[in-house]
Length: 501
Image (cartoon, rainbow, N blue to C red; front, side):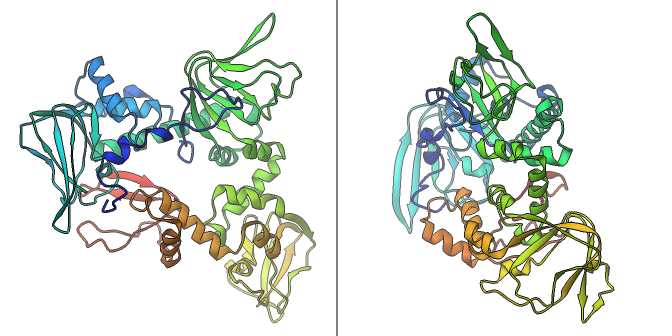
């Protein structure tokens, strides 16, 4: 908030309207009002009436007022990629406030600001002072105009002062309402996507965990009427699972329609057909879209999804993104061991790590099995991961022997480094991506972000541990690598949940 690049809350949002679209269509010309939303890593069927029941204090608004608010927030960086369901409830949750001439709406330096504003009537002046000198001064004369959006994300000092030059009217959204809406909609979309996958034959042989993992690779994309998703005569490069709306394939003498729950495109029966027609949106269409990498993962076999799931549980790899884990999948080979055979011998070079697929394996030192249960490794457990942590090849410090016939997945350190680099550097890059997504740091050059990433220390917390306590001095910044954290208000109510990244 203190950066010159983000000089004023609202300015950044007002000037960033160019980044609203994302390429998730197989048609080069099919980009016309596409809206994209990375669904929470995708994100219950969204029951609007249920949400409204929890918010009986919503201010009644005319259709014109709703339209004005939507115009005010449409190009704001915080809302430009939000799903329509979330935008609708945000608009409903906003309350009208009037400010008399000379009233200071926002004061620079005030901590704990919680409100976001859309100016709909009047003129406001923005002032910013740096080291006692006026650094910025201009007016919001054209309405609707949004400002103060950082308050919805951070409890940070206000970046500038905003004063009503004339009597002014604003629609105001509180951060608590915003975060509640965001959590409900994201969870609604997640559950909805799972239900659609349950109904589709394309995903019928996947178990619940595999569906969740595949869902994490999907994007939620909105298309406008007549927007082309797949060009005539071309093979699709994406798979489309319809959430709502209708898509149509038009033949010379017939028309084929796809409705909610239907899947088409790459990896489905309706693909790779000669003389296949174009598929286009018949109206507003919302799909969960799986890109080529995700489709190939699905097509290559459910076994690869199993391997991906196994990799995602390896603690030493917890800092890797889904995309990075996908890249590791083809590097693992399956090796079968018989009872009594050794996988690792003490003193050998540590040049690979292993994940148990079946059977049981155990750690042995000086020819004796270790007594503790942790030394017994079964399906999903891994060993040899320390070899990935060191830049040089180290010696094994114990034996690992097969106690029951079984299979392991094996990947060499050389293959890992050749594909992704050293694990320590990868973790720093993962931190860099997380830092770049954080608005507080987004203006910094990559060299500075890498410095911050490299300077970050790792901390581990058990379920129930208190990480930040209300009222304490805030002297640390956190990036979640693994697990889920809750933000709890002074009343004890959960205000928000945060996951990896």
